[in-house]
Image (tube, rainbow, N blue to C red):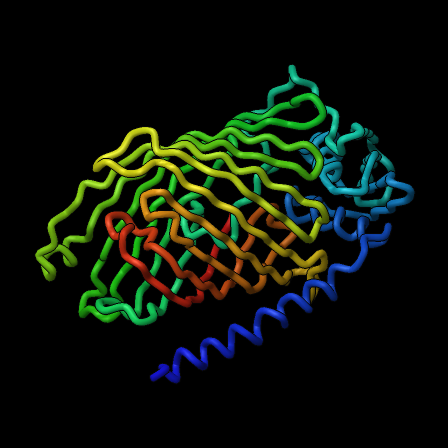
Length: 372
């Protein structure tokens, strides 16, 4: 007999997917000049924390007026806007609080859509993130707290997830028609049994390593070299008398991401484990799609989001690992890059949690996710 709860979840998924698709297709109509101007405004205010006086886009030329650049070079603002598909040249003007002009700069893009960059210029702690974090990847380093409802699991039902970490840009500079960026990632991924009297820690995974990213126009890529180690919680070990597996490995992965339109992102890539304990089959593959509304609502602070992620690993006989997320992002242009995302998530596949990697799990969840 079919579980009534499973049938209800199936009906919800069947109705939610086409509804979400319709929402994004409705809000992401063809990009005309007014649409490009609105998108450029969002980039400047959200990512750089500047007050925009006006943005006018005509025939591929964006004329941007901002109030008080502060310590931001005008060329950096132009470079950020140049990432938008359909904008070929950017002109930046600055005015004071009385509207009097202060400065002007200009940045042209090449035929491939990337901004011109001087390979000799190196920025320390650049503010522009070349490779955006993945929304539906359960192992994307960031700060988050989530409730997960495990479906049909023999041991866990109500699970808490607490993640800490980020990918930080350390150095960046020009690269032909685009830019490069050297960064560092660090993350801790922990899950807790919420049904236990003391909310037992089940497992924590630690990630750390360097990254190398590049972007030209709507195309970006990221190469990561990382170390991963897994640690069971003391309470879990005591109550289950579990024998700990010393799961630890170093891996390399490469992802390529494309933005054919500002509201659509596609990515794909793969990875290989270069050193491991115990011995693991090394290869993995990943691909996904993300949708981001080009417009924010409720005072320009709430932006709808949706994403789907697919992964498969040789160690698990290439069985699919499916992740999905949908919800909204709360953003404040005056707080620069800080973004709060409230997302409903779904996952089905081999567990991403340490030595449980051979175990098939399925869950739905809801959580708060912070990106800096």
